[in-house]
Each structure stands twice: as C-alpha cells, then as structure tokens.
Length: 390
Image 1 (cartoon, rainbow, N blue to C red):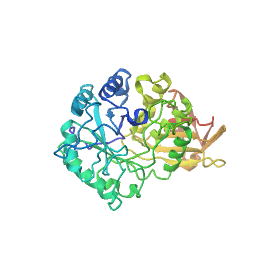
Image 2: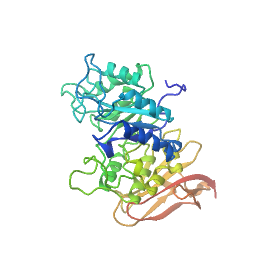
Image 3: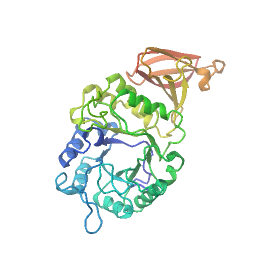
Image 4: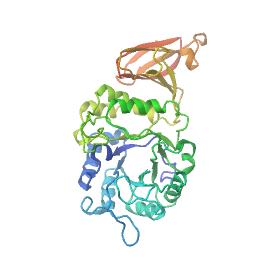
C-alpha cells in the first residue's frame, strides 16, 4: 500500500522517460535538468510526476556483494543523490532493469537478483521500476520472472510502481495483473513516425478490456514533441530514415493514448520543447479523460465506409459523462458519422448529447440521433459529452 493509504497507480502513471530521446547518453545533470524543467514548464502541475532513467545507468559488473553499481562517470554522486534531487522538486524518481541476465544494452539485469535489486532500489529512494525483457534464458518462464520481481518489490519496504515491459509477448494480458505489476507494455517499441503511432493504436483497439485500474495497458512512451531529434536512432527509425511527425499527428497520438488509458510518459527533450507540443501534453481536459477515476476502457464504433482507419472511441466517465474521441488515421479527409443508437441512446429516449470540445474548450451544442464531423487526414476531435433532455 502507498503512503497515503491508496494502492499505487489508481490512474495511469504520468511522467517522463529518458530512452526515446537520449538512449545511452544519460547522466546526473541531464536528469536534474529535466526535473527542473518539469516544474518550470508546469508539467508537474498538469499531473506528470515520474522522472525515469532508462537503460545504461549502471556499471557493466555488480559489486562484490552482488549489488548493482551506478556508472561512476554518468552518476558520480550515485543514484540516491539524483533521487533525492528529484524528490526535492516534489516529483517521483524511476529507474530501469530487466528480467534477463542483462539489459537490452548489455548491462546487468535482475535475473535471479530480484530481491537484492528491489532492496537496493528501495534504499536509493526509487518510486518506479521499468522492467524490460531482453536476454531471458530460453528455459525460464517470463510469467514467473515478472511474478518474482512483483513479489520482491511488494516486500522491499518502499512503494515502487512496477512497469512490466515484455512488449506484449507470451499473451501477457492474460496473467500480468496477477504478477502485481501496475502497468504492462502491450506493444513493441514506438518510433517517432506516424506509421508507428497508427499501427500501435490499431493493434490495441480490441484489447481495451484487459487494462484497468491498478494494472494499465501501456502502449509505450509518447513521442510528442520529438520532431525527429534525439540520440536514440532506434526510436528515430534507424540510421538514414526520416522521423518526426506534424503537430496534428502528435495531437492525435496524445488523444489516442489518453482515450485508451495508456500511461502518459513523455519521451521528448522537454528542455527544447515547442509551445505547440507543450500545449498538447498539458491539455488538462484530455488528461482528465485519461485520469478518470473509474478507469474504464473505451469501445470502438467504426465508420462504415472506412472501418480500418476512421472510428470513434467512447469511454464512460465517472459521474455520468462520456468521452468521445473521433479519429481519422487515413491519408484523406473523411466524415465520421456517429449514430447515437449504436452507443445506447435511441432517438425515442428523448435525450441527446451536449458536445464540449476538449481541444479548444468550446461548447458545440446539443445533438440528437447522430453527430457527423469532417476530419482532416491524421486529425482527431475529443469531446466530453453530457446526456441532456431534448
């Protein structure tokens, strides 16, 4: 149980992770600078709270007692001093390990070191652990490895959010909740391009029933604001490949992740973020949909003449409101026509829906029977709707 007597991850975790932009190139000053910017840019006030170091933070060997050792060049004052600095800003601190013998970048993993590593993380003041899946011995069972780390974290003496990251393998959604994890990756790694965003979202439309309160379906970190820049060529698509999205595509990316209850973990360099990207990430009305206390997944109504690329997500919210996200993932402008009969609101009921636009804050009126809008390519519209008498 957490210090405020509530379980961890009542709503999807929000924060920042170093991997998308910085990859291997991380250090103490970078993480402290990110924490400073969290406060300065208003991201903390918007609900983002975790500052997470990804892979490549440790030495290549454990010490004589079998404990992980921070890289003395990258983190000369150790991990605890960085965690203390992040905590001094009113934020929470996260770190990375792996269920295998080594991390994906070849540093020591936590395989058969789960309990000592959990105790070490607790001693350092860690609040969040991302737990990857590389270099797992082929005769070990991944499900059991995540249960082992889940047990270790739950008994380490500190509240630590457990972010399981096995990329959607091994039918993870069927057993991950029992492992004790608070979130679980359901996809491969995201890249900073529209095809990656579109394909990840499409792959999860039929899996919204599996995530929920205390164990969230993680569609990977956000690429909003990256604009094709960073040290991590994997996220940029590899050497020589075009990367980056338009602000419209980033807006749709953020809306999809929010509507589908994915944790919102920023991946760009917030020290250089554009005003447009910051506005997307700080949209309080879209964030409120993601952070709704009931944590209900949306269902999907597809446009009849373009069902694979144009659709509406409908999400019941605490208190009786509904979130409606209309999306056009195609390369052409399209109408999205939502028939209210299909969401349980027949014309004969005597009720309609009031539409509040979560992007510009405007009320667009009351509609009955259906709502049809034109969406430009790759664009979206997110509404908060209330049931009203006609």
